[in-house]
Image (cartoon, rainbow, N blue to C red; front, side):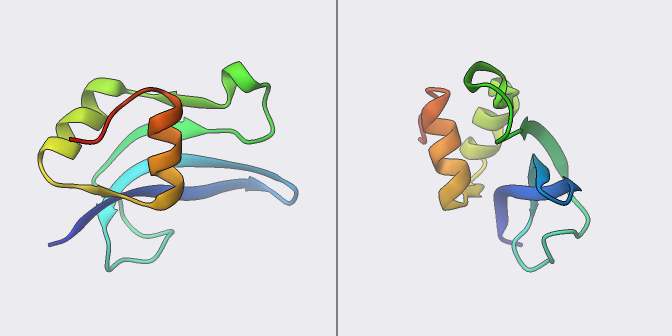
Length: 83
């Protein structure tokens, strides 16, 4: 099973927010998740936009989970280095 760290969309029209989740890459965006490790609110102020459980993120990265391009940027923003 190929595991990805990606965004799962929630919210209302023009008010999106996303959960940063671990899931099988073959499933749909709204499919079942293995674990939720954070949230991303693009509309919030800069300091409240990204909340990530750093320990869980590092653990999944160590297990070989691959982040999507957007999540990779969010991890870099929070200084969570890959590998």
